Amino acid sequence: MSAIFTNDGFPSRADHLRALWTPVLFSPRLSSPENLVIGVASATETDFYLAEANAWRRLHCLFGDGAETALLVARVALDVLKSDLSERGQIALHEPRQTFSGITFGELREGEGISLKQIATTWLASLSSLYDAALAERVERSEGALPTSAEAKAKVDRLPVLVLEYVEQLRPRLSSFFHPEVREKRERKRKPLAQDIYIGFAGSSLVANFATLPAKRSNTTIDHIKRLMWDLEQDRADAGALDRQRKYEMIVKHQDKYDPHITEKQYGDVLEVVDELGEQGRKRDIAVVPRVTVPDIGNHLLELEQAA
Image 1 (cartoon, rainbow, N blue to C red):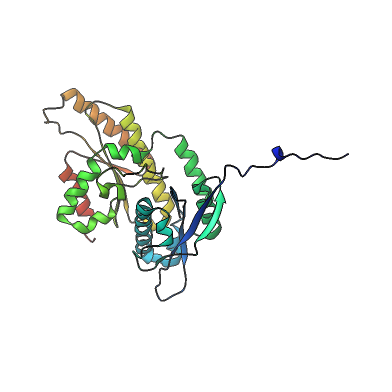
Image 2 (tube, rainbow, N blue to C red):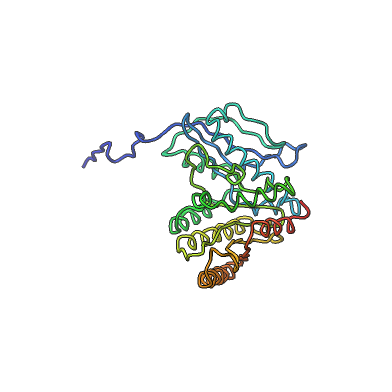
């Protein structure tokens, strides 16, 4: 008996794309040749994807008390690289900018896959001890069951930008702790790529997201805030022992009781929502912090980040 094989039985490469890719290397000790792979960037002439390490908790095993500094440098460097890729595309891989000491690119190579994401994540999983493929899969599954992306919602709410502007006036150095999209203070020119986790502020003592509660109850806004709380929870889980000393807070702004634009009933409804969110936060060990003005929120950040 003979078997007959046809092309239908084999996967097609017709839909595959070819792209350049390179590992992003972090050398925490400048006098040492040791490198850690903290990401893999892949790009075509028209698009890019940056796969990032997610098992940051492992840094604590390597650097102990120095892990927080290493984590901050690595994450800021990846944010800067992502911004550079969005501006210069594939050129950023051919002509990398030296933005941080200890951050370099590996050999530029060509790869093939069904997508830029698949190319980057496959190589990251192969090369990096700071990437947990199982964790990434769990995050992706959970994210699929959650409402609209937090990144898209964050653009609608001006609160993070207003807090940044207030903090910048009093302590400009803290601006680097805000998410790059908040620092840009405007929508990006290109369509943003989906992100697994959105963190509005990641400081040395506080990690926080921000959201505004409207006077009229909005299930969409409530779902959005719950998503931001989930992002905080995931960020803390990724960091593990590294973030035991940092506070994780969901900061919500609502109108004051004596604001003429809110009725007594609406104010009562807002407080009920705050209580509901607070209960959700207690289950996740995420503090829900209500405030009524931008200076209240800004001063809260400044107080917790006194050492920065």
